Length: 225
Image (cartoon, rainbow, N blue to C red):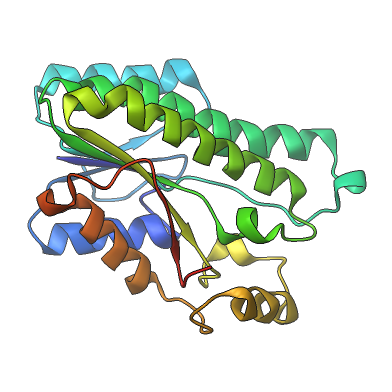
């Protein structure tokens, strides 16, 4: 089974749908409800206790978990000096703490099998230092640092931990970013074109493959930098 946080919208939804088409059992977690999906938990990943309850239910079911993919995230376009405290708190809690909590809580399910994949999501904005995204960039930079260290800690259990850092992909997360800003980001990529969700899905499939067992601790930029 593969666990996907943020799996009912945007990139997470595209990944979940692709994996199901391939015959994989997928369990999604998000704050949004998912109708007609028994393999879904409505949960705020920044709430440690709620996430722990999801872990307990999965443990009771005794389903074997091979991978954890953390897609859940929020963004807000604000200059650093004008970012409201509540906005900063929401971004850090959801993106950074939510990803850390998810890794901490669900990794034991992978350790039990002594093999697995963890994929966390960062952003190209970290590398280019996107103006107006200071807190968002800080939260994603924290995910990259955490993932590098966690990769070392889980290596003895044959579990890889990597980050995917996409360029602009047309999802709700891009609300508030102008076409001019998107063009600026695209022009900083090696491959100067807008990425599609399928490009991210393909990268996920590559990292999930058993042949990718020696790829770990990496930040992979879809589009190149």
